[in-house]
Length: 321
Image (cartoon, rainbow, N blue to C red):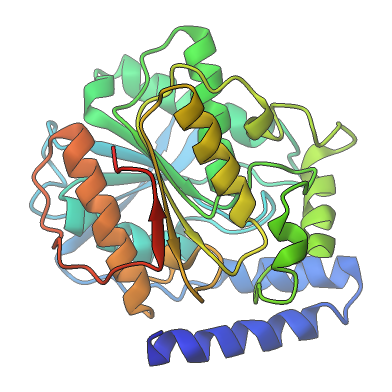
């Protein structure tokens, strides 16, 4: 464990303990306000450009060397935040590091948030942007998808929906600590209850209720782990062994491999939930993003600058796609 990881874990644990003393409404407001702050610091060699596609606000993040290259691979990225908070600014550092490591253009979707816009608003925004990219001539062979936490949920749900619609799917997808089961049935929800420094069942149930707005949390649109997983492209997951959502990733990996799909689930020890997002602060996050860049290079055939010498995770299940 890096010294940075040690102190970040302590800070997050203290913040979670303080947050749980508040009322659900106050906890929601506090968390949303924190996630809305812009702490990002991208270098001058990174191009960041706001845009609007299919009526949805988006942000392009790319090295200036490929920002204007129409042939550069595009990664549609969906931020986490429990469906109720977060946006491009909260994930810009991660997007910049991954874009440079993989030499790609990352397109972050600023989808509508609950409770103002409950399910399926966010999913509709993602689908609209994907369709627009296809209509603009970005072929599926030039696309990747990814997301963390709730964004991982939206990534998988969007892929299932786009497949059912008959649209060509991207070359592959990656998920960081995905929240795929809003019924909270994973065994790690209990076994890691005292280890996760960011999430617990109570908070997850609160934000899930805001997103679901009266629908059953077990509906496959809300919990894509329960949906049809056939015919999906290669998948990489990165997850912490200490987090409450660990079993969401493990169950998806097991289901995908049982269907003969290409799947890898890489587990890291003692890291926070969705730790790759903390690219500027955590060396473990940067190593995980280099692994992700290598995955993108393998499945999409792009030239990556990522080093294969990234620090080893705690364990990895299955062969990488």
